[in-house]
Image 1 (tube, helix red, strand yellow):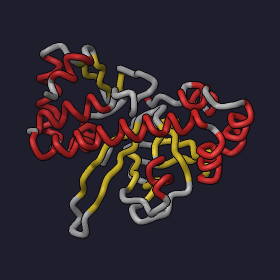
Image 2 (image 1 turned 120 degrees about the vertical axis):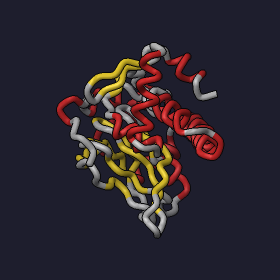
Image 3 (image 1 turned 135 degrees about the vertical axis):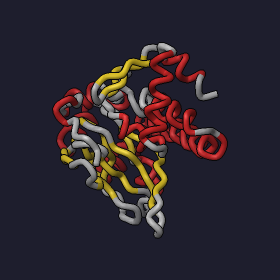
Image 4 (image 1 turned 30 degrees about the vertical axis):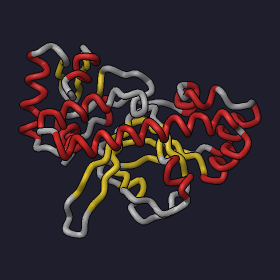
Length: 234
């Protein structure tokens, strides 16, 4: 079972989340007012689903607190993790634009709080705010490249590289727009994102620490050299 880190989590309120979002600051005053009015919040307990595969998605999501993962489960119970979403990140635009049921589950790895912008508001922004569409295009493009890299990694790379990629992904601007280098994530949670055993994850983290790329704490990992970490993926 995932260890609870609720007491350590970075927690944003609505104003913090929106003011830190690149897309929000480019909107017109009218659009900003509508977003503030329509935005709602939801708490998601560790292990709980924010959305299930096969459901129609009704909201665009922003992470205010916690850590969530995207995963796909097979009938036989096997699970593939597609990626994680940390505080400050926004996601779910692809499913809303596509207008079809979700193709993955969204699961909270720890207690999380999520901002939710209704589909009608999301579509209104697309129709009336050109700058919002520009943001979505960049975000979808970055996400596509990330998923392509992840698919290649799981076919070609060993467990150590999968851990490094999962760790680097948590400081990628797409998933970590706040630029946090001190990550409140346990080794169990990182192993879950990398889809490797906790033991193999621990071995890799010890190696990275010995090389001076990271520092380890209880339920936390600090990145000391992002460029060197990225280089390790190659």
